[in-house]
Length: 463
Length: 164
Image 1 (tube, rainbow over the protein chains, first blue to last red):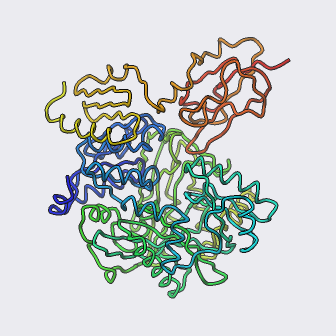
Image 2: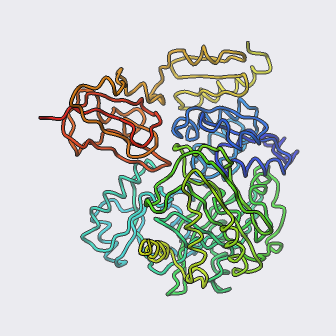
Image 3: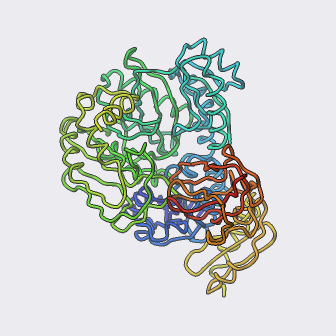
């Protein structure tokens, strides 16, 4: 179990999958492809999950509430030990970006499939990451480091100009984030964002950033091995968002010029080297369409929900590479081998009622009839009879569809969405149908506020 | 009984536990269950020990066991309701939480006076937290659901005796 045996063998033997839902299924399959045994950690609510059925073994780690199972470092480490695993894959969410899990694995001779705790700390803290980005020569959005008081925030906002965003230093996923349009709104928004950040991340620190109105969210996928090699797998456009939650993701970011693609990937690599990055990670940027430039947003030190679009256009299996990197093997390819072919689009299919303000809809899946065919991939843990529990997020699956170019991918996606039927709970499938047929989406004339500003307003007006 | 091949695993887990600041661990793989807590309980059993362990008293530092901290023999049946009591019902399906976070005191207990500004509980559905407030001012006379219990839309959560 120590690192020398691992290096000699060059492979992990038995991985604990410390996650649930579709990503647990994804990791179990990657383990199988790599010839590694997979053990899934399950809460009481996930005993009959698809991941549990596919796994070589299962460990029970507690009650359904994440605070009593998937979020407990001790339960995860001891689950790996009791199941005689040599490694832990955290997936995304839960403990994936908590350095405490990476540290506890290292202390107990378990390989953490992800960056070392120190890299997670440097990359995960938004303010520390902004500092690292500046050192690497990467443009950082106008704004501040941590602001301690409302007065400090007012001063920064005055300098960069309204509107501004207040963001959580420890944050992500839109929590602890607030847009402020005028100085007289700032104090109230500051209090709400800070308390939201404190309850979500145990850390109420905020910073201020200039709000870019006509922006695209573009991110670059990195893979770094333990031998100092870092490569990029191109970019993704994740501009279709609601309340900072991604809904649709595409690879590549087709609206960018070739020059902007290069500048973004160069910037991501520079930051990756500055952080000493190891494993799979993403560098997120805001691309300002009006100015034709970009600024660094944040680093995600884990595999991301939307990783499949990159896999589809590059042919690289990111989760299998994570497992190889963790075992100490060098990357199986060089930067020169990476080529982006065609176009891929992912739709997040959530159990939510769009007409009821996106309220989550737990319940039993009565029927689940996903589309199939060339260029269609579905990453999901759902099956007919599956009980969508109220304990976890609403993601049912990710429909990933590709084509030789963006138009072909959209045509293929339109037909796939038409052939996707789910009964028993409300889903976002119909919303996706409306998105992909909209002239703005077809012409790739969208930005991060488009979904809420245009499409959802149109849908409300029509109903 | 615990077989010798399990002893190495148990030893590694005890070592990990002693190095850590974890309050309790409790994991089960196949027929092997291992439970440790900071008050000195150590249990490892390889066959049929699960029930015995589950029924053992649980006293842990900080307490991940939320139900313990909210105490009181409160949950009752709606049929026990005092006459004139007002029912507060669940706005959606979800999980019923009586306190803002694990280990914290409950928002409201039997005997407390509440009004429409008070949060009575949180109903959590898929990461969305809804603070449920009383629709009337009065005294809490009943709590119908255990902390952490699953509720459906319209399920009674609290009974309030309105102030006249």
